[in-house]
Length: 235
Image 1 (cartoon, rainbow, N blue to C red):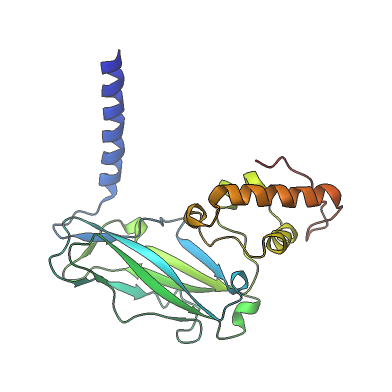
Image 2 (tube, rainbow, N blue to C red; image 1 turned 45 degrees about the horizontal axis):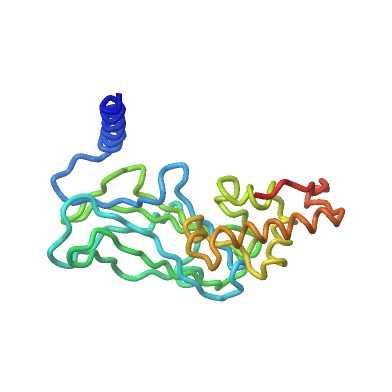
């Protein structure tokens, strides 16, 4: 019986691996992709309202498929000008090139964001980035080759609210979001991955969620649409 269970488990893992490999673009060269983004979930939104800073840096991870390089090797990364609405030098800056270091299978790509104009006060501007083939590196997965970095000064719902924050803070509204910032003294981390490394980690947000919930249990307030903010059952 146990032997059969083990065989079923191994078969399942192999099927998952085959499904991923089916999407891999055939190439004899090492290839690169964005592991954290896929078509349909390929954007990250940054609000300067989160940090109150004039400049900040976000990092995009690119990973290598295949053998690592024996020398420093540049990746192919371009700005898709047709889909980019943010002006370089005013809202963002980038380095001239990005390199895989000797023996490394991963690279952190810094994107320097600038609060350099008023367009982002009432709008969300986009930097469209695309991995492209080079002489030494191909693109591994077409659906993991693009990332859209969106910049604004507006209050932005965290992309992972429905995946995680909802269990602590309940249904989202901008009014509740503002109250969360007031209670915590800061906005939520940019990505869900940053929650794990945030001081206090998940227990911190669990405590803050209960504090915000207690506030609404003792105050009758409405959201931006005039709907009463109901008390929820925080985790």
